[in-house]
Amino acid sequence: MERTLAIIKPDAVVARQVGAILQRIEGAGFTVRAMRLVRLSQVEAEGFYAVHRERPFFGSLTAFMSSGPAVVLALEAPDAIRKWRALMGATDPGKADVGTIRCDFGTSIEHNATHGSDAQDTAAFELGYFFAGGELGEDAER
Image (cartoon, rainbow, N blue to C red; front, side, top):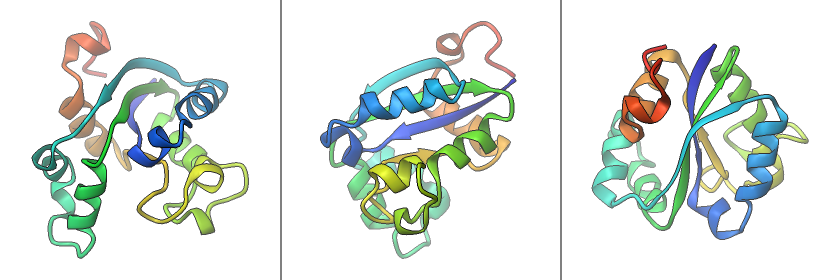
């Protein structure tokens, strides 16, 4: 089993798409190990996306991610990182495959409804950013 972080971004929360996205997550066979509604401050968003600090989109991304509530989830499944990224679809909703979350709910590269970890080390950092080990169960070190 593998764990990954998923975020239902502020655009999808405001559009009342959380339930539909959660249905897709559970329908794809993921176990939700932890879930929380958060409202990131600008500083928290900057800390989470620090790896992108030098990118031109950093300011608009962190402003967007701190603009409203988001849902953070710890998902578990075999090959969870790859499986979640496939379910999300391409970052640009216009290039995402039909039936993916970003194709169906995203409206732009930035307002693309969801976030997902891209590798095991990233997932470990991102899960730790939002969830203490106890929230994930006694085997949080997986």
